[in-house]
Image 1 (cartoon, helix red, strand yellow):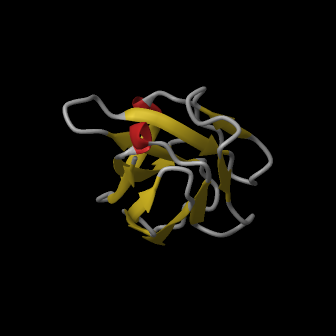
Image 2: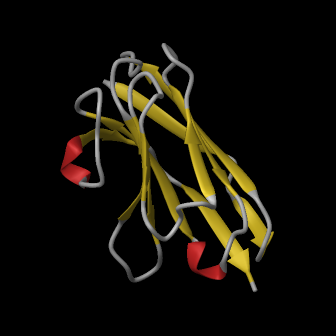
Image 3: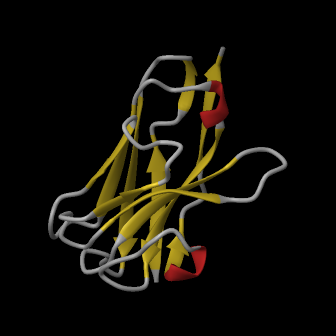
Length: 124
């Protein structure tokens, strides 16, 4: 079992920045991809970004490409999401997830463990 804890959410004005962090405990996640998803009120959970087990390959949703950066250290069961130039439409609960395999894409069924989420609110 892997337990994920996210941190770093909060309230920020449009154009501002936030850094989310996620740490896994219990069974190691260092050999698995990790990812970030988000869910806005009344909407389905959607893919934001994922990163491979060694951190050498990252994938982004088109809506965040060029503004968000996902990162992790090799051998460490944690992942970060640097979010810049935030927009009101980025407002959502952000969830960290551990992939089933060393590489994972945008589909939720490619992830096995999920955190409880952290709220990000961007005011206009």
